[in-house]
Image (cartoon, rainbow, N blue to C red; front, side, top):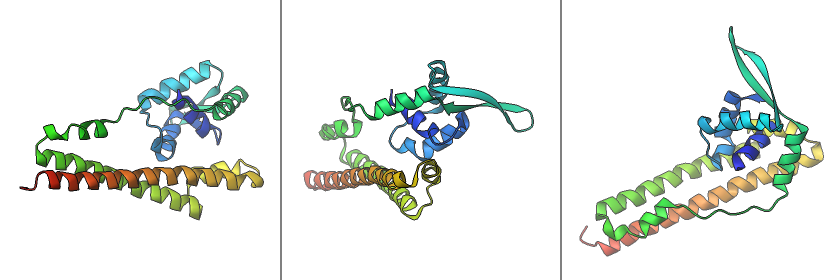
Length: 195
């Protein structure tokens, strides 16, 4: 259900085609909510049926057409209601930590490879999220600049602070996962001293 609200958040900035939404989604919201185009396009069509969006055909290229969506007042109301409703947490599905609980079944080299892959994944994410904070701080985040332009000057510092706050949380999570993976590698070395 959060996909719908992630799309509404993006469309609250400006009307976009599904293609534009997909690009913006991957560059911003995609860091906290993954959704492939096979989920985004059906969600847009359903949201239009539900009255949350209005779609219009626009010229694309020399002969093509695309559907551009804009958020409706009903969509804005639904988004605000969602934002003002406490989050219901879902149960965890964490394959990395599940596998870690049973690493005694893995060969030592395979266990090391799993921990190394985990470390590398979060090291890459850490760099991406640090870059996002830098973009926010120096005013080069394209989507944030567009969002700020839609807000009264008095609300702009809050929008900027909450975006930065979100990425700082992701940075903290990445740092914790990197530390956990390093601890796992040290533990494997300790438990398999013969190499």
